[in-house]
Length: 125
Image (cartoon, rainbow, N blue to C red):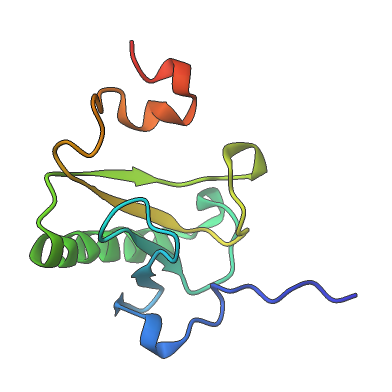
């Protein structure tokens, strides 16, 4: 039985919002908030720690462009950035992707602790 093809290795052209030599950006199909964008390397790699220096630069540069895109279209009040690296961290698609999650004032009662909320009882400190 052959493994399922990686959905991030063969994006549909219409899905791509932005791209550069080593990465592309698209909207998350299950967004956490309005304007949730994924930044994805073109090469199939599972972990941020396997990205080359050039890929890291391309990912970071595209992240900045994606943030500018979100600013213009959605006018968020802040952002969370996230990478789920490995199954224990919640990674379900084993192709590196960075979440750019726009945040809006009032979208939750008390956002303090931000990404610490991946372990709910550790978010507030």
